[in-house]
Amino acid sequence: MSTPLPPTPGRGPGGRQRLAQALREARHRADLSGMEAGRRAGMGQSKISKIERGTLLPSVSDVELLCRVYEVHEETRVELLVLISGLREEAKARIVLARGASTMQRRIGQLEDSATLFRSFQPTMVIGLLQTSAYMQVVFSRRVEPVEAAKTVVARESRQRVLGNPDKQFVMVMTEGALRWQAGSAEIMVEQIEAIIEASTSFPNLHIGIIPWTTPVRVFPMHGFHIYDEDAVGFGSAMAAATVTGASDIATFVDLFKAIEAVAAFGDEALEHLGRIADDYRSLGGARP
Image (cartoon, one colour):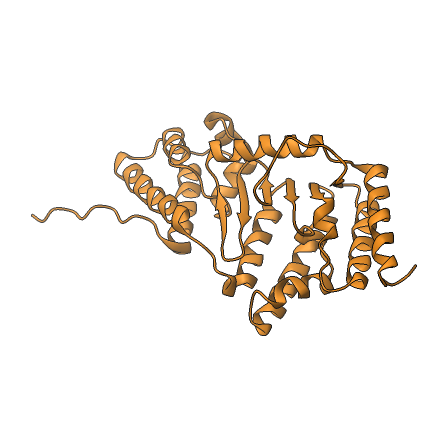
């Protein structure tokens, strides 16, 4: 009799969907609702749902815990643990290069759609969900080929519809330096800042914070980042983007965001700073005095 082959580690979207489907079917066999499964596993129902839809990659311990809750057979449990181990290793090593920028925008959109609380910080540029089309075109024009840049702008514009969902909360913080980095022209920047002001006053679920250059700080984030609930964090560089889902990594970013949020100006004070910066751009030749 031949020896059975060991389970194959997970790789790619196919492996992720296999895991999601297997856990969903295991819950159904256990005759548990998503809410009850979450209660027994110490997870929120939304996390169970995201795992089963493949929008959130669970940790190895998450899968092990769910297997116990669902009373999964030992052989299947081992297969699922091997599967998630491979997927987690792949996630650690994966980088998304700029030539896949439009695809990356769609992946980010999936995370935004699944999150109920979105927190974002940018020290060097306007946050993507707030960017105007003209600003986006400047951002992507030197990073990717023209055809890919056009597709990326369309994909990012499509993401912005999520701001109109009243069931979601958005907290976005930018430094004054991010708004002083003149993208393309003073006219583009006036339009951009006016768009931020309009969004701030149009969406009650959107909270925009500005850190003025005059504010003393003792926190030094090395790059921008985006937190989706407390399930995932996304960040990137000029060449690559990454998503982390480890609990300790997420906790680090949550604490960092709290420190950033504490020194930011919100509400009317933020609007005053935005108006001041827009006026400075107008003095450089920006539109609509």
